[in-house]
Length: 463
Image (cartoon, rainbow, N blue to C red; front, side):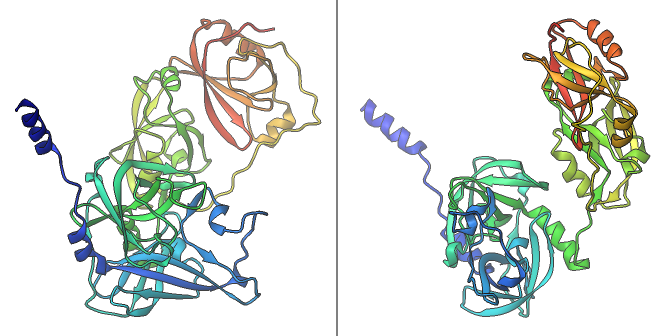
C-alpha cells in the first residue's frame, strides 16, 4: 500500500509535456517562406579548398543555404523565413536573407506567392522590413522578451531546407548573449533545432507571442548543434519602425573604446565589485571627450540604465537617439561622478595604428619587478604614435608578472584608485619598489592600434 501510495503521489507530481498544436494552428498562417534570386556575377564569394558548402565557410554563420551555378550570368537562389506584422503586408525577416537580392518571392501557407520589395535593411542588427501588395493578412502577436525566463519552452516556425512551416521546440538557454561583431543585439540563446532556411522566422513563447527573430546558429558542421540565437523582438520592432519611417537606422555613439572590468581591475581601481565598462581610449573631439570622459574612467550607468558589463554599454548607447543629452555615472579616482553628454551618431571609423619599428635599436634597461625590460619612447616613436609619454617593452623575461609583449607601450599605473602616468624607466622602478610583492594593480597598455588595461597580481625580482 505504501509503495502504491508513493507511486501515485509521484505520478501526480509529474507534469505532461507541452502541447504546441493550438499555438501552431493560430500563429502558423502568419509565417511565410521567402526565396530570393540574385545574379552570381554581382557577388563573388571566396572559397576554401576542400569545402564545397558555403555554409561551412563561417564559424558563427547565417543559416541560409545558397546553391551557386558557375555560369557567369547564372542566378544564386536562397531561402529564408519571415512573419507578417501588419494586415497590409509588412513582413519582418533577417537582413542577410534579402541582402543583394534582385527578386524576392513570398509564399504563404495558402500557397499564394507574391513579389516583395525591401523597405529597409539594417545589417548591424540583421533586421529587414519587406512588403507585399496585399490586405487582410493574418498577423502575429508580440510578447515582451524581458519576461522570458531561462528554462521556459519556446517554439520556432520556419522553412529549414525549404520545408515550409516546420515547427521545432526547445527551451531558452540564456539571455543577453553577445556574439562576435554583434555589439547592438542582446541575443536570446535557445536549444530550439534551427537549420538553413529558418533565418528570419519567429520565435514564440507559450502564449503564442513572438519574442524573437531566429538569426544565427553556432555550428562546426553546418547543421544544428544545440546553440541557436534569436534577436529580441523589442530590438527588431524599434529597428523596423525606423526603417519604415526613413529607410535606415540611426544609432548613438560617444567615441570610446572599452573593456570588461575583471575582479583584479575592480580591486585596482578601488571599486567594490566588478561592474561597468572601463574606458581605455577616448577619441579626440568625440562626444565623450567633450563631456569630460577620461581614459581609465569606469562607466557605471548611461541615461539612467545600469552598465553591469562592458557589453551593455554599446547596446544602451546605440539605442539612444543621436542628439540626446543624457547623464552618465563614472568611477574616477576612487569616487563616483556624474557627467552630461550629448550623444553623437554612429558612423564607420578608421583608427590609426601604432607600428613597431623593427630596425630601431631600443634604449636598454635592466628588467624591473614586472620581469620586463622597458625603454623610454624616442622622439620618432612619440611622433608616429602621437603619444606624449610611455615606456616601450623591449624584452619580456621568463616568469614575468604581467601579460605583456615586446612592443607594448606602458602608459599608466593604477593602484588603490590612484593613477600615475609613466614617463621614465626610473619612475616606474620607484613605483614598483613601493609596492608589496603580492600587490594587485593595473597597467594601461597600448598594443598595436588598441589600448587596454592589464591587471597585475604580484611582482617578481628584477634582473
